[in-house]
Image (cartoon, rainbow, N blue to C red):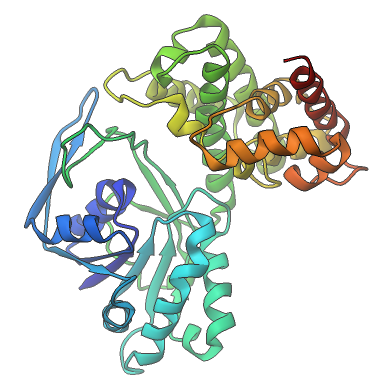
Length: 381
């Protein structure tokens, strides 16, 4: 069995690649970073270090890497004979990996079983998005694959200097995969679980883990704190993050019928994970790309808009949105762009273009006030 994974970064090696290896797949990493590809190919094993209570070291073998920027044909050839294709590249990069997958599917022997494709991204419907990109290029090729959406969860912080291709991760992980597209032919991925309805898992994860992680980063940045674990050590920040997650849980219960007590236990588990002092993670890393995180279906506007539509409280989420709007990191391109937009656009335009909210939406006014307040603050600096 062979799996091709796009994105040989820390998530690719320390989470998805690890579980595929444990499922018995020969691993082929595809990446555009030549130095990383060379470093992977210079080793015959790497170690995934689980940092925290109960963590162990896991060794990965049986892999190689291909430079997709220099040799896209080689990547397509690997896809053509693979059993599974996965990716962890970021939602905005899916359109760039679609050509290699489409080319591989076009070369695939029709006698082979359909290729099993799963996008492992922090986004709702990422595999559907990847399929749409492939179908734009070659609708017939897409018929040679099955596409399943997934929900993935594992914290992989910035890596210690000099770690090479080894990866440090937290012990906890979750990989939920919708089972329907596969029929009786489920991929062999130990540790993953297959579910009939993925939507509650995706939104529970995105609107608890990602919302909480980002809120901790932005509140921490406002307080001048560098590390995520230190930010949550602040009672004030912990209270604000907890309040935001209580609002997302109320929405998840209303929309998906999830049990409030189970959601409370899930929230507590998530916050304990963020407090792990052995995961040296920074508010700058977690807070990067604020424009994406403020978009319509992402970790703040997504749950807050649904909560507002159900007449539920959104004040704590709006406070987190305000902290996001104030995030000013000169090293992050999106942060720089957001601060530029705050100085050049009016609050109505900002609210519509950044968040995708319609003026008549019940959340629009509160978010509009956030942008207007930040603009007033900038004028006084």
